[in-house]
Amino acid sequence: MVFSFLCCCSSATVTPFEPLTVEVVREWAANFDNLLKSQRGQEEFLKYLKKEHSECNFLFWQSCEQLRVQTNQGTVNEMIRTIYHDFLAPEADMQININAANQGIAREALEHPAPHAFDPVQQEIYGLMKRDSYGRYIRSYRYKELLASFEPEATNSVTN
Image 1 (cartoon, helix red, strand yellow):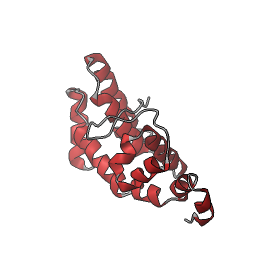
Image 2 (image 1 turned 45 degrees about the horizontal axis):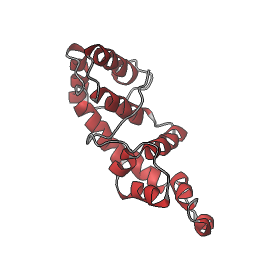
Image 3 (image 1 turned 60 degrees about the vertical axis):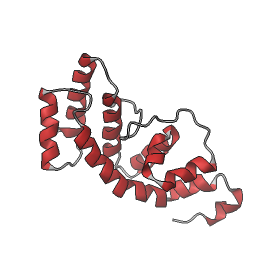
Image 4 (image 1 turned 120 degrees about the horizontal axis):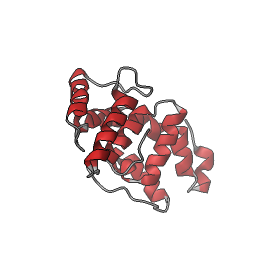
C-alpha cells in the first residue's frame, strides 16, 4: 500500500488545489523544492516518472512524507511495516536502491517505529531524485509541452 503525499523533506506545506499558471510551472524549473511544494507539480512529476518506469523513489518519498505527520502510534507502526515491505525489503516489489548505512536504519525502524524513522533514507532518495530524475523531467518534452501550453505562440518551438 502506498500512502498519499503531503509535503517535501523540508516539512513545507504542499500548495493544494493551486491554479496551474505559467508562473507556477516555471517555478518548478527554478528548484526541486518548488516542484515538491506544489501538489500539481508532484502530480506532473509522478506522471513523468511513471512513463519512464522510475516512480519507486518518488512513491517512497511520498510515503515518508505521510509518515512524518502521523501522531497515532498504531498508524505509525503499520506505515513503517508497509513502507519497509513495499520499498526496502530485499523482496520488495518497488525496491529502492539505498546505501548500506541506510539499509541498517531501515531495518532499525522496524524495531523502533517513529514518524521520522526513515528520515535519513528519505534524504538519500530526495538527493538522488534532485540530482537525477528532476533534471530529466525539467528537460523533458512533457515539461516543455506543459510550459508551452500557456504560451500558444511557443507551441511550435517545443523541442526534446
